[in-house]
Length: 499
Image (cartoon, rainbow, N blue to C red; front, top):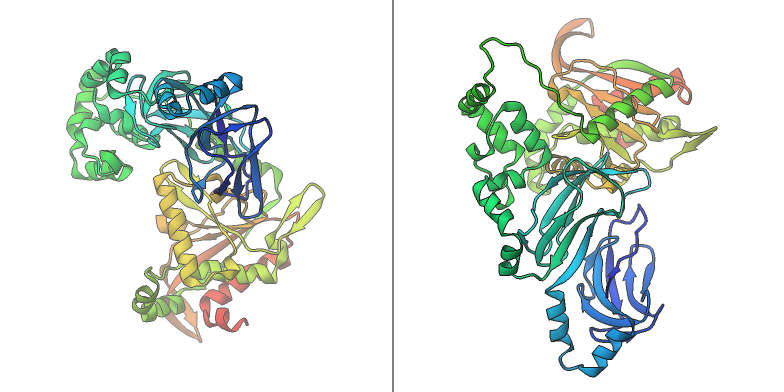
């Protein structure tokens, strides 16, 4: 019987680890609780021991490789039978193992979910039973309340059975499929010929669509075969669909859909679509924030002309030196960070009957993604320069767009910035992101007549809105915080001089 040797579950604050030292090699006999490998994290060295007596079969990751929690790094043949087999024919051991691996059945499981996530949903299967796949190829997308997890093939082979279909709710470590590792393409074809024949008769691109793309195609009545994919391996992306919509080529497909439905001209129709897990989570969190906090919003306005002039003056040199454009968000983040230093209550949170003051500055940045609004965290903003802030925000935005945000990207954060101005919002009252105590809303920059030194001038003005929890933040602190942000933005040299 084959046992998988896995990386232990890593703490939430540790993203990955490194294989430090293998104390055994393939073919070695080991005893129960014998140290097999040392795995090094940012903080500690973890020892992985043998679960029982046996023989080391295949080592999948060499020293120096970066690995993730629960990742399979080796296989072990259990019991005395494996040992006697190894001693009886040591010279042919590797070939015997290769042949056994060719028919080895492996369980495909749901990854370990964070403590705050109870279950998940099977979003999309990218492979079908009998279909040949390669090592590390994405088999299935699993959607949680916050992120989409990809489960990849542990080796070359094929799926033999899918146990959890799309839409089913699953839990951590649940077996969702059976996988035949090392199976040849011919064997896979013979074992799943009916499935492959069915696939030949159907459009293959439908298996490679992400949940957001599928929903968009369904909403617009577009056939996937009408769109040319530009993503990896020819996959259709959301941008491909939007480009297709702008070209106007979707009209025939929409017309065909109406004909298929045989709907009379002018008929009033409806469409019912279930909420995604993320949308349900957003709804619940927003409702909870409204019901469990004493939320109040205070407003101010800021003259953006000094920042706009500064960007115009230094944009070219900044981009040449740092390889990224100088945007407004870096000014917002640096101004907020300075204000948080001066008003620690705004950087604090309530935990039961205690107030927790944070001496670090992790700021959540609201990002619109195809799945909904998420708030990934930009960490240690006080230690970042303007270029570091811009690069950090760009990385989070790209991850959000591509569905690559990890749980670590979304956890934590002491304060949130949301910029509705990019969508044209002139003023809003943002809702707090629990357990945080405040959120700052930025808005559209719009030219307005303003009184300056007794004269009317046209200036680019922007409204600021600070929603805060009145249980922990009083009016004095909230207004003082917002005025500090206003002063920093209207006179950016204050950020340099710390005044």
